Image 1 (tube, rainbow, N blue to C red):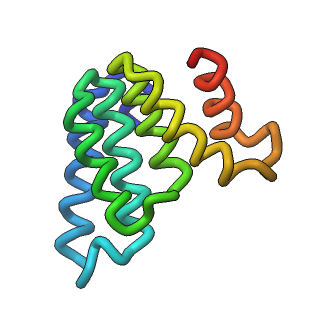
Image 2 (spheres, one colour; image 1 turned 120 degrees about the horizontal axis):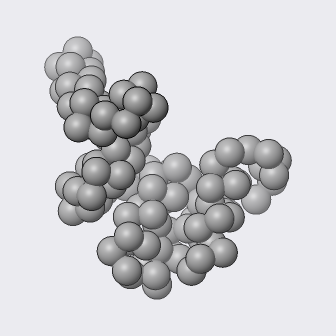
Length: 120
């Protein structure tokens, strides 16, 4: 991934391009779980790049069909935290933590969520 080499603009463009190409190749993007993964990736890279409004807009598209999607809620919590809106961040994070309540402590996303929770 481009993020690993520190090239966030390239990572954003790769994720954006993947989402656009995927959208052109399926009948209904909104009904596909792959669209969720691609939006989470794009939203994450946009957030890391500081494009918080665009990141939120990309992630919000997932909530239209999957309002309790745990990774999307974690990413929105991170966006809201970076915006300084800890109350909203906590609400999103609560959804993720509830979904992952039975997950192993070694699960990297659970660790990420717990680290964020400790800062709110």
